[in-house]
Length: 182
Image (tube, rainbow, N blue to C red):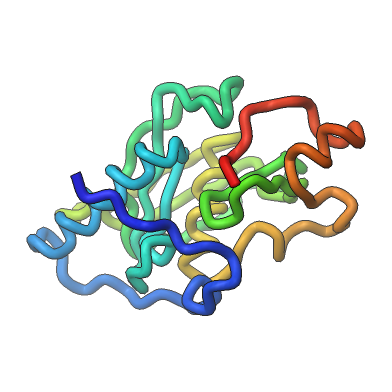
């Protein structure tokens, strides 16, 4: 296993646009993806973007059968997505509380499109073209934001709906739930 440190909000590199991957099916890419899965699993995440482990490439992973941080969320297929693009299928937006491994111990109410189409490549260069909705779509949008240097707090529209989990729970904004460790 090669668990990597997850960069935290405040690290400048998290605010940069990542570079396209131009070489697929390489040992270097395979090692990056292995490190990402190991790190995401260790941190109990539902997704991870390469910039979160200090690799400035357009690579995200996501997926799980069950996740303790989001116990009510349905399973999302395990996916490696490289050089992704997202298009919306409908204009419907939903507001849901989000967290992030790079912003531990906090949550924010974030608007995201409910139905999307995502395209890109797997680690072997095979095309991916899928549709996703609800939490699955939210996870993809969140992870792909990292590739453009955007963290979820930048998407929170009203800062009264952003804060530390414990305080949000104590003040009745957020139902008690498993939250990231600080």
